[in-house]
Length: 435
Image 1: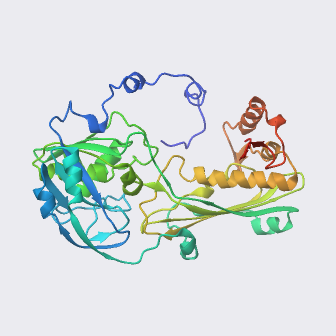
Image 2: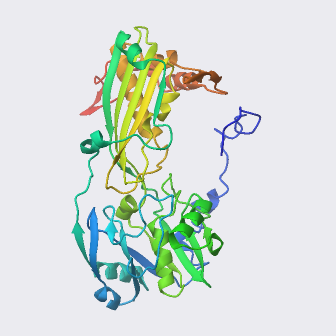
Image 3: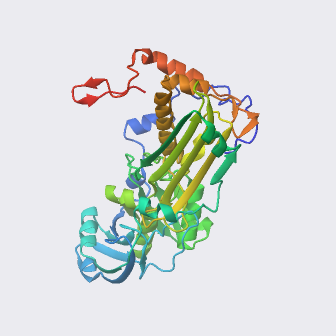
């Protein structure tokens, strides 16, 4: 979806969709339990076996050996698939980490094997019987420790500059210079990443929980080295994705490998909750620096937002400064994004990528600036509203009513009754804020 033309008379621009109490076409099915999710496709893939993933016990290193004899001999176990017998695999260009480790391990809990059995309990028990010997190597896991080695990302727009930030900031009568940090954050949607996979005549069918069907076909094609026309992906219902299901993950790949290993019989596989955090994407931790210079009346004259985050080699940054480029006015501005290499699970999209943590830091900085100015923080935002792109003042917003939102919100929850001095309102032992 591209927004490269001025707003027109479509339903979204005319405000006929947003904010309206429209019924979801799938709402009744979801609320009555009749929607078929990926792990529940007994209607389309009966007699499915169960897959269970064993994740790496180390965070960085190599697999030296895998002893699967006891697992294969366990009751109900039909197959054990590792890098040693999976066949040749590729890495999808959308993936930073490989979906199956071996011999190298890129991050903790990276999928090492899938055990396929007649029941879920048998598959899980079989996975516990696998004996994997590892050779550990040193890794990088701490963003603060790696901050000095972070580099400018090769793609996107990591640096922006308009006007003379340094000069304007130096002259500003009121200055704010603060550091903010946010931790790694993981998705935890109601439906974990789940897939049912089956093969027939060399063609793969996936019933999976995925937000982007075309991307899923491409990812599986590049991973399994199959023509796209031999892959059929279906995902009529997604029980929450928030960005982590934009791409297929190890549940889909390992279910497909498991099914192929038992002659194409359907295999259903759902990631356990801890595996969701390590075998899918997450929002990387950030270190952010905000500098804002303002006149005594609150008008911003200089604003800078710098951010550091980390990812596996070949990964990308958390684009925290992006929203600062357009939210508030200020003639002199700059942003900078830096990326460190960390041996952690893959970082990627998680609901409002970049903006979520970037706006957290920006708005905290605005509140702290308001305190320095002894100004109402809502009023500070109002006087720094802009109806044009701050980086390109000739480009006007087609519709922007931040001021209206602020005023309506303030009125509805009694902003005028707040105590303007931070840390003064308590409910027993709890501090109570308003925002």
